[in-house]
Picture 1 (cartoon, one colour):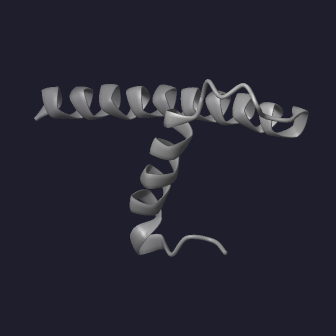
Picture 2 (cartoon, rainbow, N blue to C red):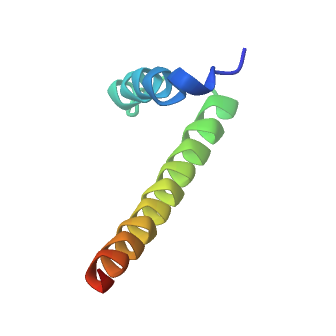
Length: 64
């Protein structure tokens, strides 16, 4: 079931914490390992996008 928009980040944060705690588990099957790797890629994309947003916000605040 998809997350409700009002609690999307709250619920996802809890799930990401669980993934972080188990990131080094060695008992994962091939599909789970592939999903772990894709999750890491997506997390990096999120960080990159967040950095772009921060830079844009800083530039906009300098203009004020």
